[in-house]
Image (cartoon, rainbow, N blue to C red; front, side, top):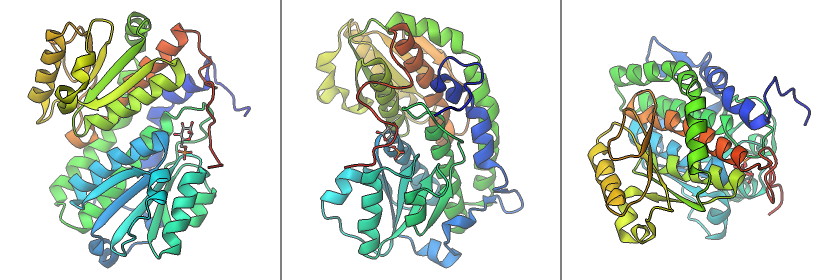
Length: 364
Ligand code: G6P
């Protein structure tokens, strides 16, 4: 690929920094203030069909699967439709029950990932309705799906996905809001989410301004052989994605766990040499997350928290601006992209082309 790097040393850095503009693009022209909803004509779902959906099943691979996990949470909380996400590759091989009242959503940056495409084809063969949440316009998955939405992140060159992940999650917030407003989400709630969405680009810029600080933190954690990432409910997919990003580009082993599961096993790993990154949003689980940090501290584990204010239990806190609870995962992912980036840079890795990985896996 020969897109201009625009003064950045790597495409990854360029793409991380493009996120305020990218998010602005996925929102543009879609918000309807009059009815506190969004227009997503490409979904090809009328109000009656939208009301008939009993479940939402989201399928994707890698980073797109993680975006789908956050998406499922958004659909469930805003539209109150049971929703979950699953790796597309696994779904296809377990002979899933294809249900006419389930809305299937395939997520893919490239729109060409074979495992996702094959899952879409299998679903369609069995009469399922499949939408695509895709970045590349006119790609195979976009063509194969019954409708969907483009995430408008612009070209992403670095093998690991950053801006496309963020835009995909924002696209899911739009889908969830759209479905929610057709179903039981009130005007006031719709307005609250719309106001939150509008704040995102400026808040992401604010986070990007703290890059020097994150770079210093990365230097302190780059000697780790392994890292633990924890979060709860909305924070857990953020932990999964941050751990994936770190292993992909720095080659440091990383695990992600729901903070609530620590006591059921991973706590045995905690010692000073295994730092933990804790996702600690100011939501109803704040105290629970603090208790998990206390457990780690009691075992002399080092903690880097990502939170909306300094956390005393943590050795370091990356403070990110507060948005609506439902949208906070979008913001909390951004500094962790920079953390992975600067860790990999400190270790001298080939960031845009990590070993053994491809941008798009078009074979099984
Ligand atoms: C490859 C890439 C990942 C990406 C995954 C899914 O494995 O290395 O970064 O998340 O494919 O790609 P897609 O284009 O379907 O989102």
